[in-house]
Length: 203
Image 1 (cartoon, rainbow, N blue to C red):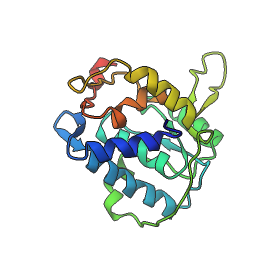
Image 2 (image 1 turned 180 degrees about the vertical axis):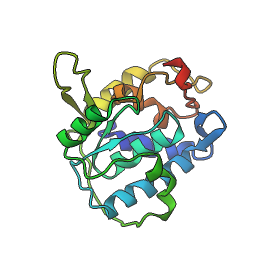
Image 3 (image 1 turned 180 degrees about the horizontal axis):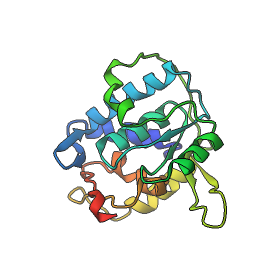
Image 4 (image 1 turned 90 degrees about the vertical axis):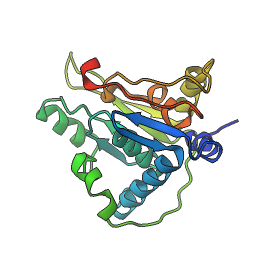
C-alpha cells in the first residue's frame, strides 16, 4: 500500500528508469531524467526558502517542463498551484496574493534551473500533507482555492490507472489550471506507458 504519491513514484522510477516517461513534440524524458530534473528543481526551491506546506504557483505552457515543475514542487514538500498563462493579469495577481506566493515558477525560472543555487533538505511527506491547490472559475465572484492532499492524489491515481496496460499512453489536453491529483498522477507513475501531451490547439 502506497501512503504518499512519492512512494509510488520512487518505485516506478526504480523499475522503469530508462523508459520514456514524458513525450511532447520534439522533447522526451526518461523516468530517470524526470526524477533527476525534478530533484534539481526541489533543491532550487529549498535554496529559495520554500518550506513544507508552502504553496508554489506554476505559470507554464503545457509540456515537459510543466510536469517537471509539478514534481519538483511536490518533492520540496510544498503544494503546487497551476495557473493558466491565459488568465488576465489581475486574476494571476489575486491567486498569487491569496496563496502568499514567494515567487512564480515560469519559463524564465525553468530556463535558469541549471544555474540556480541549490540546497539539500530532508523532509517527511505524509498522506494528509497538502499537494495541490486548484482554483475555481470565480464566475460568481473571486476564485476560491480547493486543497487536495497526497492521500487524495493516491485515491485518484488508483482509479485512473485501473485497466491501463504498458502499451497505452496518457494524453493531456486539459488546461493545466484544472489539474488535480487525478490528472497529474498518471504521467510520472504510469510505469512503462509514455506520457505525451496534447498541443494547445486541443484546448
